[in-house]
Length: 330
Image (tube, rainbow, N blue to C red; front, side, top):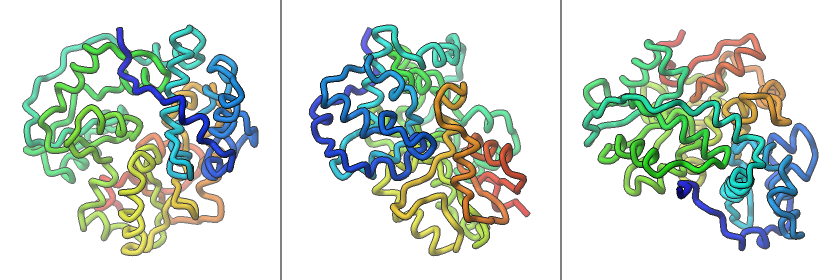
């Protein structure tokens, strides 16, 4: 059975110069200051002849926020490198994440075969699906029920498998993609799959729910200079070059603060990372929220991802609103 996971090129290992720029927004470096657990640490070890089995701890620590990729001056696909090494571990039965992902994979179920041609397909996160009022608001902002299909098959199990390095059965991948082909656009609420979807569905625009909502003038008008806008880090870094000017324009137009550092890298809460969900990695979500809010006193936090919103609510007593509902927020 072939894996759907794109493989890395060994040539990328030698390209690392050891500059450490990848650590700028890396949550693992921020919380541990252990270079072995960083992209640089993995690249250096591999250059020295280490195998994936020699750096299991480092591979299990990464949150896959993606901030290292746009930061890297050598243009190394550091996320792809990490995913490829995780796949090597899983193939040898050494992956610390594979058992976690396996527990998240649901058995096959019946899904509707809606005609998605020229429609917007929304891949909604679990929390959004469980919130009918917010889901309705998101659907309205994407064009309304007549133009939007909320997918029954969100590919959640595929994302979990890929994150852990577990092979995805070709027939399962085809089943998922069959429900997306022909769509006008695919809108995601968690950005890990975005880079994969662009490869699997060439020519189909892949957009985050946050960016899609911000395309509406009413949404931008509802943002305040006292707001902190919390980006979906994975979606942002997966399309970094295109999205930097989008969010720069947002900042200048609305005056709101953004969860970006001086290098335009997004600081992640890491709440969506597989290891964070199970508490197995070194990154503590509470510390990430503290880092994001350090030196800031927003009147409210506007989020693109509900897991990020829940993380802020859990750690800080402040108003949090999803960008899809912001025009109705008080």
